[in-house]
Image (cartoon, rainbow over all chains, first blue to last red):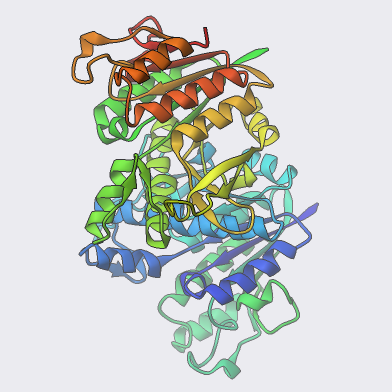
Length: 259
Length: 259
């Protein structure tokens, strides 16, 4: 099986032009086929404020009404996606920016109204692995924003960590998959503000303990759920690390494993 | 030679959801390979105003400084592009939304500062016909916004009529090409507000006359220049018409010809 690396970068990394540039240089140099998934939450919230719309987030998930959907579509699929693609092209990586609507690559289902009405938020239904493979075979590196569609004309805002996990799982039928979550910290920390408190390995049992000890909490919980979901569904390796981990895999990071 | 239809739709058509929907239904039904290029000027100007930035246009060309470039990238490559793609997907057309940066499809050169400094505005240098052909061969219909890149990391705002003409010319080496400019009028009119004054045929000689008589003026002049450029460089057929011309080619329109 050929190797495929899927890297997800978060909003805080995207906000720092110099860190983003260093990361993209390393990403462009990866020798094997690669896919990038990006978030961009902060920039969307900034535009919301500029337009006088108060962004609403519940457990880090954005309530997405019609005006919010326009904003995330502009910021994720437009501004951030195309800026990243242009930078990667300049670094010799043949990047192609995509949403889930493009070539029907990722369909999702609008989340049902329950206790919270999330609005135009989608949960991934299907990843079109055949079309993604065609791009990879032509040495194109897909760069996904986390906008998907329902196949009936509606765009849907989707969690970027989940999009990354779902693409990784779907592609793991054809490739030996490494999934790397890059963010502003070195990995999972015991004390959130102490970079020396890195946890280098977390298996499922550790996770239960860390969760009940409230060491892993808040936004890190769904990220960890995505990591274990990916591993259980066929992804070979899952890492949470800082931007530098893509260029230097021996640098400190957290490796997630089932056992 | 196989046929290829390239349709360009303008901002006024995009602004009317019902007209856009009818147009996209017709576009999706075109039996031959097809490419869509869209503008979206009005929506970009509306967002500029909302953000307190006054859009500046000279002869219909947008002066594009850094903040303006962010706005057009958000509106063209994000909002309009992905909304069109999602609608086409719902109509059974396997659309893929693209900027010129994606897979390095269209490179351009930043326009030199002359009497007017247009800012981050690009003139098309090269169209990557091989990659576009690969998409068409997989029954994918590319949907281009008019954002291109210089290959060195800079996105550039490019005139959508010109992008359409340049793609048409480049692809005419491999396909028998029809280029259709769709806008809010039935075609070129003798009297701008009289829909019954349609001119059904315009050749190069007619154009000179219409120009010196000031019947064709303003924004229609560069559009006509694009039409003749395309015909001179190998495009087989060029039409200017309303949204309905794609679905019903026998409906009234203006056909542009060299002789």
